[in-house]
Length: 236
Image 1 (cartoon, rainbow, N blue to C red):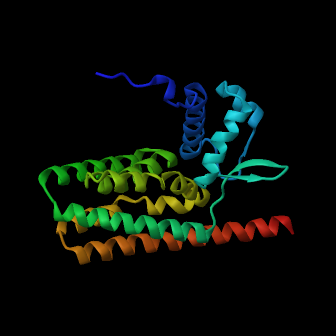
Image 2: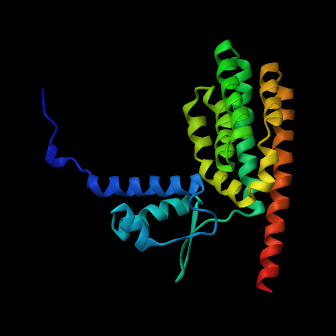
């Protein structure tokens, strides 16, 4: 049995890579959780010291976050948590809708007591959280319910693709704010999604999910256009 020629193998230095990945994960969690909010400046000196990493490692993590659309770098000013525009939100929701219709249609075609139980449990969690949780807890429960449709397919590519949008969705939710988002988190509207999948009717699924997302997009765009108007008035 021959041994691998270890001298010929090439590895990246693990500590540096691990630190960058950890820094990226920690910053992403701060953004998705709402502790870092849209428009917040990321103080590189403070954050790198708090994490125990070099500023070079932190900047590598920030570049990945910028590629993901979660932060933006402004020359000579610094790095900020992204604010999402009405157009960004519309494009994000178009992709998300397509993924969730694909997932829901798959769930209906493979409907079983296990899938029904799994989706119903997520709905019950959303229902409880809506009445007792904070804004951020409701946002997480809302996302978890939608994610359940994708999880139930057991299609890992579909799930990874959907989860890649979560950071941008969180930025959108935080940009819109609690006053406008609370109505969109209502259990009744989400129960209709569950009922559509349980009907096992592909056309009904498409209609119900499309209606749900279109209503949400109208609310999001009104909130963002209002915020844009307020910002213009503040600068004038």
